[in-house]
Length: 217
Image (tube, rainbow, N blue to C red):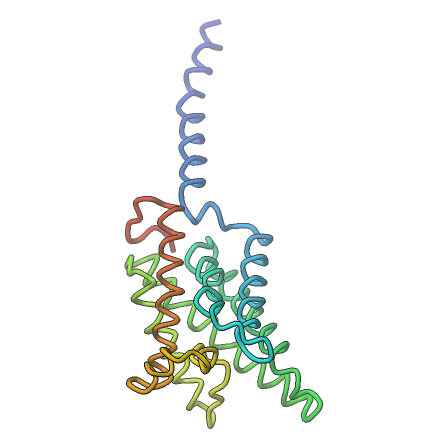
């Protein structure tokens, strides 16, 4: 009887630690976004929303939320390799869908260009994870800087391919056209990306009410 009681007493701290670990997993983005199903859902939703903002559909208001699912995936997923893999697959799917008109002109060039453009997304995901998870910098500040930097690179590297920028979704919105008069298309992209980042910040704040720097790898 004494041995059984001793074993039960020894098991209590372990059980308590497991409960605390479980509570922590539920209270942090790390614990919520760790399954492939969740990552696939977030990536697919971002592809769908991004495809809505450009012609022929042209639903420009969606541009202000289209990257939020990807930001949640990037900043909240536990595994960095999964983030980079899903970021690449998300971008590759997006470009395959939205540049499909190139296939009839040059099939090899179409796939090659889609692959090349898709490489930018895991490259963007890396600094986003660093500033959010290590530095605790708000996405509303960090994301527009990183995103506009990637658009600048896409516009000049290998002769450039300045297509599907966030600013292009706003071509028919008069206030945003006036913004472009002052700061150009990259300024418009900056504003749209900042709103995406701010919405992602709000979601992370709800997932973890008291965020601190350094809460993940």
